[in-house]
Length: 403
Ligand code: FES
Ligand SMILES: [Fe+2]
Image 1: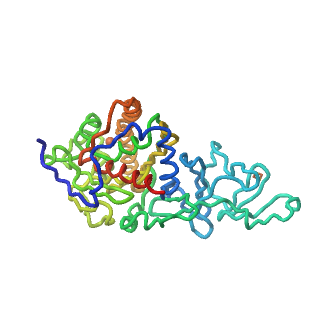
Image 2: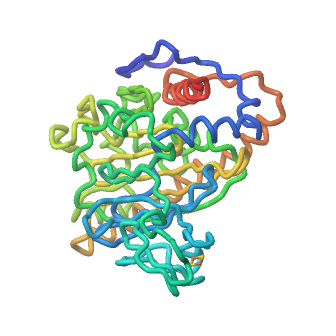
Image 3: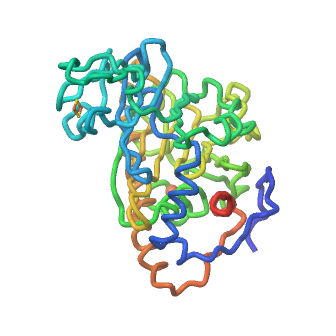
């Protein structure tokens, strides 16, 4: 027997299952159901608010399961909107991809094909040679909108004609628990890759800390836990209807590398190092149990996103299905704004250490899909420490069961 769990559990766990039949979930037919019943109906984080800071700032994001590209733009009125990246004339891409124009700041968007122009609020404001379009109603030919809402560090969208719930209802109490949690941060790292894996496998690998002792034994062997928590049980775990979250236990006595010993004399710690902070200084959703030896939270937002709040940093992780056996992973890491050489060094050091840890996380995913697709396993087995994975499949089944 290991040490007793120190975990505090919260939320409705009554319908969670510790065994999940699996091979059939990773087929093309099942993924079609996921696309129609989950991705077409959920509120989906698509972009980072930090990428559209000013009036007119925009970012173009691919949404593979909806087979579309969106322009997410902050209008001159400050409101964030999202539009399909397609011209209303004959359907060219309004912002072509791969030409370095995926982000920028514009008053208006002009199509490269015949130069129709749209305002940053999506209105059709210019039609070239307009007399040749008798009866064309500009009002009815603005960009095709998708429901969008800014929430803290993220922009969510919903592809339903009329969303069946608001973002506030979708997130429940969670919605108001993160006010200002990401303020004063800047982006320190961005990673993008496509793996031959199923998106569920990918998001699951970032929804539990059970693997920490094993897969990360060479990179971050002693940064979590403590002598009273040798199994590194999560101190806090909570499940909501469309999200879950756990807190991780920091080991403040870990063996510092020479670089850490120098850098952290002069600035605040960043992943994988953690420092004691006053829990009351955090937004209520961050370290919700106010665990004194807190390291970070992991917060899967169903279906495909994981938020990672930390004391001096946070991360955004997307696991976008391209199809049932390909996943595009987008990871962004943020930290306090650098104001000194030591801050910049800490950021660079964290970026490199973080990348090594991520590489270990990502290295299991292709093999898992290949192994499970053989059909050899009747089901996977999930521990209590993997409760957020149990909740992920519960949430998926609930949405798939709805008409
Ligand atoms: S397709 Fe855009 S202006 Fe013709
Ligand atoms: Fe990991």
